[in-house]
Image 1: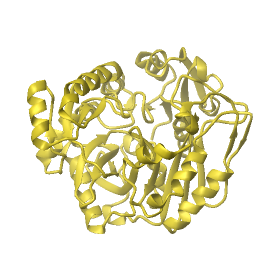
Image 2 (image 1 turned 90 degrees about the vertical axis):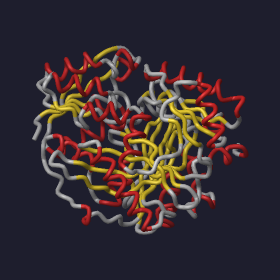
Image 3 (image 1 turned 180 degrees about the horizontal axis):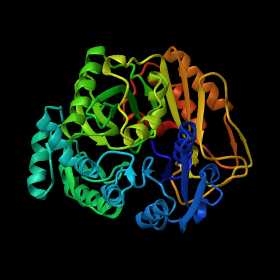
Length: 448
């Protein structure tokens, strides 16, 4: 087992990883930007080092600075968390060249599955269902013809990256060329790769993802699904497990395909296979996230498995102790992302000092965060400041527990989306589980 790990991240996920390491008896090294000098992960780690100014490119995306700290402090491994460098194959390769274990899959797999059209071709060849589409847009006229054949609407997607960037929905033919150009330009700016591909845009679908764990001995186990359909501008807001509308036979087939997908690319460590589920119960591969997911706590609640600890164990060469027949989803878990934003003012980001803070408690209530009273939220980073997670034996009870927890949560000094999330939970579409990825688009038209 590793004796010292560097956490190449910030915020709540850095805190989460440090806590897991503390429980495992592993010393931790934190890196931080000048803007994060007072951040919680800086104070919780055994050692902390500033690696640059506030901007991400000068600090948390500075691969050389991070590797230098890891080498200087004698770290045997680096945990990238999620976002930032977690799906950067160059960083994973650099770790390997410097004899530092990257806690995640091999860099070649990250590159292969990070290229969305390559991933799509790979899954199609393996027999995993994929959405009808064009693997790569190389000729606008040809792509426009193909779009007409499969029928509008279609969706243009960046081959690299994620987080909702480089995506354009095209509803009619005359908008096609502009959509491709803007998606490509956005992808080039965000990911350094402007390549895009084309898919049929499925409406009224659910976004259901399967969590897989793969050790270095060749074992692959699926830990079940998460329903991540509650999204605003392709950004997840509320996640839950299990998916209430998923039929047992469909779940079993999706889990089989998720395991098949991981085995096809010789995947190791933690990963997520994301699917679209239509009203007829048919599902299609969307993409693979080769990292820890923001919403991993709901899986931990319904399976009783600490996935962060297992990421570390697997990277250290330890075999995963659970078999597929051991996995049972018990009860219901719901996660609400708490963002510092004003939902009644077009979700405008809200920064500033937290003057007073009260965290809800009680059985099976968890708040993963890096904020504290008097902490000042910097304006340079993602607006998510915490994740509120609850668990109950029944879904109705879990919804009530989450509503109670959201009402009790107090973060004074900045706006948050807690009240907005509570309003969403009260909707009949959420209560019966029939909400789709386009639900919030409709809901927000009348939200004031």
